[in-house]
Amino acid sequence: MIRIHGEAQSRAMRPLWLLEELGLEYEHVKTSFSSGETRAPAFLKLNPNGHVPVLEDGGLVLWESMAINLYLAAKYGAGGLWPASERARALALQWTFWAMTECEAHALTCLLHRAGLPEAQRDADQADAAEQALQGPLGVLDSHLKGREWLVGDGFDIADLNVAAVLSWTRPGRVDLKSFPGAAAWLKRCTGRPGFKAALAR
Ligand SMILES: N[C@@H](CCC(=O)N[C@@H](CS)C(=O)NCC(=O)O)C(=O)O
Image (cartoon, rainbow, N blue to C red; front, top):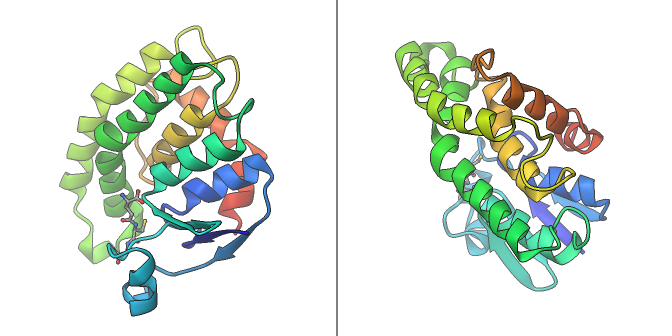
């Protein structure tokens, strides 16, 4: 049985969304990152970093949200969310690494300093600077999506899911997407999917 550790209000949302899209049965262990559960000795045996998500699947213990998603898509999503061609898979990796290295930290800063942290700890300047830093990557995404509905192929796949999971933070992070209409419409298409909503509801 596939087991995912981590509440939906964390990066565990990423594999939860994917598992919902894949229609797989899984056990969801709602390990809370805010209450210290990720630092308990039993959990540290699974992930010595003390972070969620963690996947357990047939004796494999895997951490890092995007490694988990790429593994699950490759193993269970062939012919669907996992692209069939080497070229498309390479592009899916490209967009996944891009989301993690070019976007994630800035999107998280907006989320934390505009919504996630207690008001007294929020720093509006940090959020504004992060939103400014996102302008470049959002421009890249918007240009790429001109004339296309999905990032890599003709349909929603793991590239879209991974990038949209990261950029979904721009909504609570109140990042203004008005200058990026193609990216905004694509993000809405992705996060409007029943799988996204089902994962969030967990
Ligand atoms: N790069 C990791 C980051 C994981 C991470 O930082 N998770 C946060 C929750 S979203 C966490 O577990 N924090 C708990 C802690 O640091 O104690 C990934 O993508 O999986």
